[in-house]
Image (cartoon, rainbow, N blue to C red):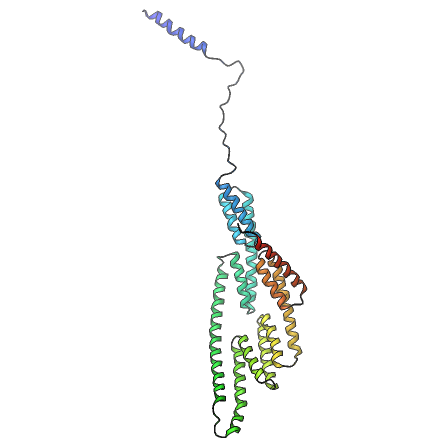
Length: 338
């Protein structure tokens, strides 16, 4: 075959292929390539975990456990970092916790300055309930525990010493009379009674007042007609009450004032008035505390309101609020745990 016919065949084939390819009409644009669309799933393990921790946060907050609610919201933000509402709720809750922590810390410091270790401990414990890693509250509670232990040891030592003195006095009275017979015995009895009384008054000054009050009552029951001694006892107990009042220990102070009147055995208008005023103050303080706690810690609110009613049974507002708090506490306890 010659070269010229072969070239003609190849050219004819190329022209045929071009004729078979479709051509776009004049003025038409080429169709764009289809895009890949990604659909974000609405459920899944992450969404389920976020929903569950939201519910747990809501339940914890309703129960007044703000620290646990904050932890659950933190998990929600961790699982769903783009959830702006969860992050905003977490920030608001953290700010509320800081505010409450600062308030309880100030209350605790004030109680410590007033010498009320029991109230200070309660406030520091509330701080730790909101902020378990709070260094100041942890350090202060350790110091209060150390001081309480030291006082307890001192009180036990004083009690043992006074009990030894009482035992010596009883042994002296039970011993056979010395030379001189009944006259000698009669001359020692007043000294022994005085010795017993001074030991009890020393116990009042140096240790737990509740122990001293029991011992003084025993002495008064044994010597009810010793008016001078009973006046001395009443004055000593009233002095201890003034000391407690100066330290801010109002509940202890009104108890001591009332016991001073009982042990004296005669009305004492100043002591009675002081006890009544202190009872009213304690009732109002505990009532205000209970009202504040109603929003965050119903169990603590009930305790505060019970203390308010105990201090001032005539406080009708405290009694009504206590009934309300107890009803709310019962309803909360009936809610099943999730």
